[in-house]
Picture (cartoon, rainbow, N blue to C red):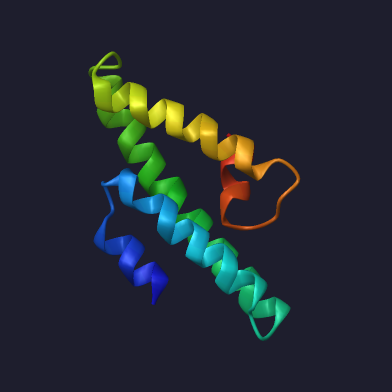
Amino acid sequence: MYMRILNSYPHNWRAWEDILIALDVLMEKAPSPDLAEQTYWKIRCFLNERVTILKERYAEDPYCDDAIDFENKLEEWASYSKGQSGAFSYFGDE
């Protein structure tokens, strides 16, 4: 369900944070480790695609407000990921 919501906002990264937090909770409460792992890899796949698309888009004008805000948000999310294994851990790999 959350992945469907995330997919409905593919290029609106401002909507991602609340959804990623909800996915973190879902992963913690998953009835099995396999389901949590499956959810984690779906999130990684989504983020790999979307972050790449957005970085390419913002590379055209790296000094626009959206590009700067996006890079700052990626850094903020990376700080959340330190020592974590949930949805935000993706950003620690950047």
